[in-house]
Length: 457
Ligand code: S3P
Image 1 (cartoon, rainbow, N blue to C red):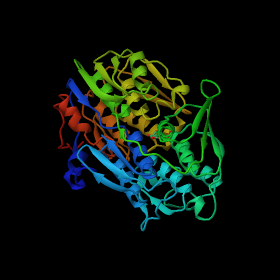
Image 2 (image 1 turned 180 degrees about the vertical axis):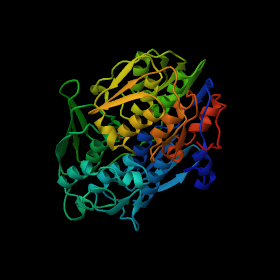
Image 3 (image 1 turned 60 degrees about the horizontal axis):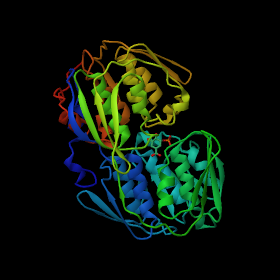
Image 4 (image 1 turned 45 degrees about the vertical axis):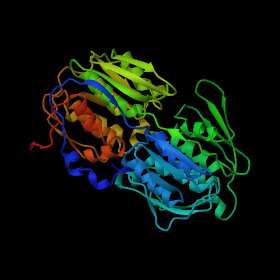
């Protein structure tokens, strides 16, 4: 669609006009597309590998497409086949200075990781993005990267567009000892990628776990990287500078965050029973399913070969409980869809420690509170907490502006499956960044109320 065929094959006007209504039941078995975090890292790490990498089942979405374009501009040679792509890397330290600025679309992960990679190189690169990405904070990565010797040119907001000159253009990449005040896999990864070319060992201390695919992939490609667990939450990562990254083929498993939308859809609709196949089995990323289970959802996770699982979900009556802030890093991408589940459950849910939601593709904290309120749900916010009182009947009958945020768009479309009147989402196009087949998959699961002629409300 984006990667495999020409972009023009996709009818953007049509997806923008889709909406769901009526309480259809979902049944059947489907696969979710490749994990976004792993797909982006596979491309970025293949770029600096010496030799050829084959990436199977990469996510075919806009965000990945932009990262793919970016690694090509930085020197990688890409060949796209039916269900795999071949990436011929330039090797560490050989990034090319692109002729033109690099457009990253909506992709925060792609941008922050590539800023890190370029920081440790001798290239000079300008990154820019769409209106949502341009509003997102970048100082969180720029600060440590400057400390490592990168030169940064941007305006006082420290947001895109940003021009970065790698530390090796006029000197060396300096090792760093950095304490992560924000639990973020993107910041951690940016530092680790820059540290690859440092002379010596760098350290990153995290106080809350975050996804660790960069660490895993680098270790598997010969980088000396160690984890020193101090206690349940504190971990010190050490990484040695190197000069060589071994190529290694990769098969991308399905994205648990995309699976979560389908799981909530099956849970809140009547007489549903679905199986989501080929999902990445990573305890950290499966946290959302454990929360749903604790709420009373009928969810069975069956571990399959290697790092995948299938998830069997049936309609269930849910009960709310409080989600503590210690979960916030693991559930960071799932709060929008969890808030939909909470709105349809019995009792009150307090979701605590959601401050970081304000800095996602949109201000998700505001989007959840204002969106649910508009749909007729009792919802309040208090400092960084959101309090939702679930109800049996939810009115709907409103328009929600997704503000370029795929997870907000998908969440309110799912809520529309059970509201008395349909919810119209403005900006479904954003769904193309992570799950282009979202509506098609729902149709495959038996949702027949997909419509694309919006009424005037
Ligand atoms: C991601 C990390 C998370 C997550 C994002 C993907 C990654 O962001 O929200 O969707 O692939 O590293 P933060 O690092 O800002 O928490």
